[in-house]
Image (cartoon, rainbow, N blue to C red; front, side, top):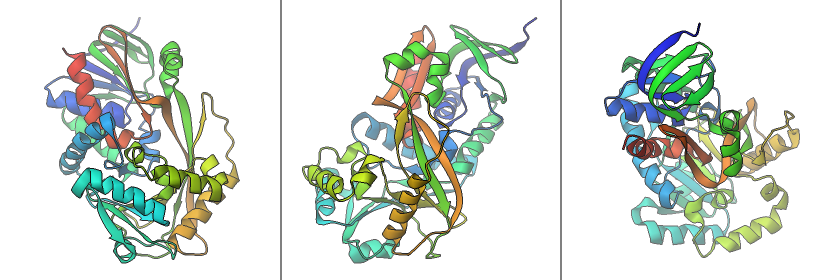
Amino acid sequence: MTSSLGSADLVVVGAGIVGLAHAVDAVARGLSVAVVERDGHATGASVRNFGHGCFTAQSGEALGYALEARTAWLKLAKEAGFWLRDAGTVLVARADDEMAVLAELQAERGDQVVLLDRAGVTARVPAGPEAVGGAWFPLDVRVDAREAVHAIAAWLAGQGVRFHWGTTAHTIEPGLVGTSRGRITAGRVVVAVGHDVDRHFPGLAEANGVRRCVLHMLRVADPHRREIEPAVLTGFSLLRYDGFAACPSLPAVRGRLAAESAELVGIGMNLMFTQRPDGDLTIGDTHAYATTVDPFNADALDRHVLAETARLLGVPRLDVRERWRGVYASAERPFLNAAPMPGVRVVAVTSGIGMTTALGLAPRVLDDLHD
């Protein structure tokens, strides 16, 4: 006989940041919430990332979600008691065409972008001799990705959210979620399982072109042993974020990097880093895409990340503490918000900006779901 795990106004499948964002907004609406998570705690993209609220580099719909998420992050950090640094991002420019892109973005965004000369950059972050200037994005924030989602889950549990850890969702239908531990009666359901959308709704994943994006990331000792308050991006980042796409000088940057660093562009390099609370640096990253990911790590990708980060920092080498793979859902459109059946939404951030946008996306999903 199948046991009952009770009922909830909203059942969320998945306890990563996208799932938790829906739980946070549902609690604010006074709804009862149950969260079903197959692992004993979040282990996916939400804990493997840079902990970077990269708000300024977004555009369009994503920018709107990001700015709303910024407010939510600041509020949650106080309420849930996790580490957050409201110190912005510095993009280090190492060529004049990169400075031109930043000047064009500043003309569009005003005080969201503060242009810096070389001295202004090095006063904020360590940078090697190639740095010619850059920009500071004051709205961006940093959290410790390894702590934040766990702290949010603990806070939500204190607000009455029921977590079913180590529990697999087997069936999802209107008004009911069947799990490995029993059934939950659901007023509404949000499925937020990231790149594993195809495990539950394979046809939906195929129709939306959802694949897995695999990243090579590392934790290294900070060679300069200094506090680095902002996140750090580079010219490679200009190619990765939609906020720069309309800048007239971007094609010049793209062409130069393709000519000078074809191999790095080919592996999807987004040269960036953030500093952890313990002083170490999270560095990365590379991008490769597949529906089914091979389990083998190419050491050459790690070596590229290490060499380019050392060059950025102006040091000969870096000491590695940890290596890992990030994995997130990727598709042509940045967000998946599908309704495969009444009262059920399948939601994923399919652009690698879940930490940046999920807390802004979730209220829009629930507005629609509860109309």
